[in-house]
Length: 118
Image (cartoon, rainbow, N blue to C red):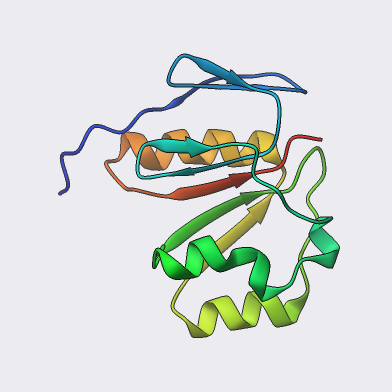
């Protein structure tokens, strides 16, 4: 078991997320205990595989994709391409992604989270 202590998402409202004591009001990407914000992205249903370049380059194995207030799926082509690269992606609304991120992190797993704040 990996005993690395990872930070949890401390709070979430409809318009912002608190991670490591800092509030984020724009979409963010959380990877290896760090947040990248703003995370620029097109509308979820318009995303291409190029929009996941960070995930691919960093060989993220488990990605939680919070798509905003509602669960919206990127194209099946994008999901299939990620799966062929052995990148697991779970798509859910952002509230669920934050909750799942905290559960997995508390189990000493290291998920990457893409969280849309709309």
